[in-house]
Image 1 (cartoon, rainbow, N blue to C red):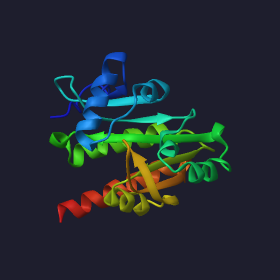
Image 2: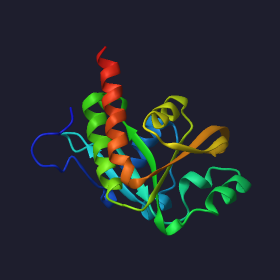
Image 3: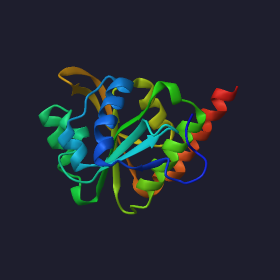
Length: 188
């Protein structure tokens, strides 16, 4: 059960003690690892349950290296990064929910908070990626533009992946539309 009543502290910046729990939860939920030094570079937000356990979260990063591009073949990474004004880029990565809390409420809480965090950065470009076809379709459903489709290397394994971009100012409205559409689909 999520702690969604009372104080809005159910999603908050991760403290030092939360980073390892975030890493472990992300690995368990996604099967992927995330380097501790990358977590220290980024702004990590955690979703906690009533027992104060980390049950989800995400990170945003505005400083190179961007995890999204590190996963690409070197030449593709150079081509994508070259035209980007890196001082105006926000990377969204490692979005996850533990299986036991996945559902409409947790999704709304997580994605709304993420939209709120990113949406205030007017003039910024948001970069994010996935190796999961259903997430690629989800991102495309809210108007994200595909920057790359091809091989990515995650934890030493090469697989198909996609990278998307969207203006930060468009993020909140489009994420809200996508979450609503998914909720309607689930209720049918």
